Amino acid sequence: MKIAIPAENHPGIDIACKIGIPVLAAAAGRVSFAGFDSTYGLSIIIDHAMGVSTLYGHNSEMLVQAGDEVMAGAKIALSGNTGKS
Image 1 (cartoon, one colour):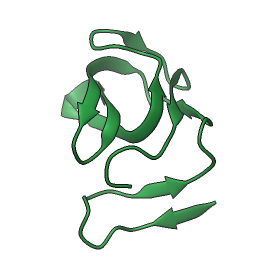
Image 2: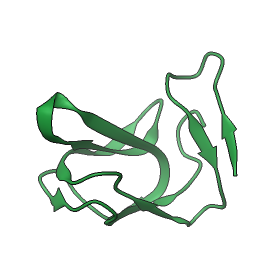
Image 3: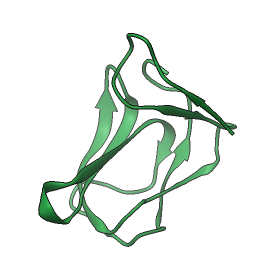
Image 4: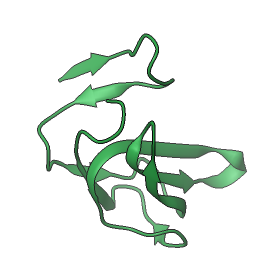
């Protein structure tokens, strides 16, 4: 697995993998956003406890929608190359 740290595209890391690989939730929480973003492409934000949230960007397909509750390890999307990846 490769980890690319973008110089100017966006904060965070992009993890290289084949398109269509399942994306799993790192922790349980509620999906606060599931849609298109000009930087992160098809993206999902999960709000966890204590004000912590996780953003999953550049997906090819989203499997959840805003308001969904997800458990840790739940399949939430399929990896992709949307947005500035």
